Image 1 (tube, one colour):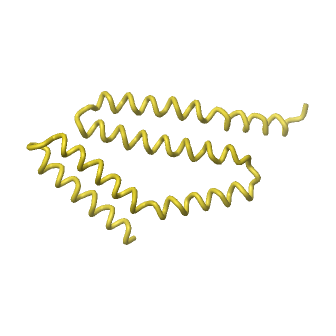
Image 2: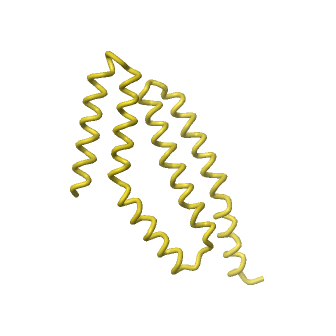
Image 3: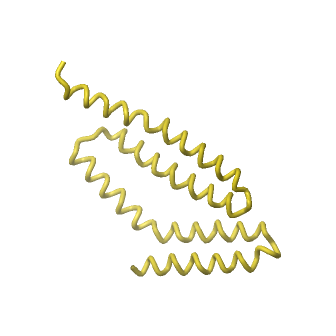
Length: 130
C-alpha cells in the first residue's frame, strides 16, 4: 500500500509540474511527463519481478512450452509500451499519432499471438478423436 501512495504522489506532483511548465515550455512539460512515468515504473519493478516468478511457476507446473512463455511476456510488454507511448503522444497534443501507435501495437500483438493460437489448435486437435 505504501508503494501505491508513492505512485499517486509522484503522479500528482508530475501533473502539477507539467501544468505549471506547459505554458512556458511545452517541450519540457512532455519531458517531465516521461520522467514521472519512468520513476513510477521503477517503483513497480519489484511487483513486476514477482509477476514473472508467479508466471514462471505456472508454466513449470503446467508443462507449457518455454517459447510460449517468452511470447506471452513480449505481448504484455508490447501492450504496456504501446499504451505508455500513445499516452505521451496524446499528452503532447498528437492524439492522432497516439492512435496510430495503438493500432500498430495491436497489429504487432496479433502477429505475436499467432504461435499461441496455433499451439492451442494443436492441443485441441490432439484431444479430438480422429
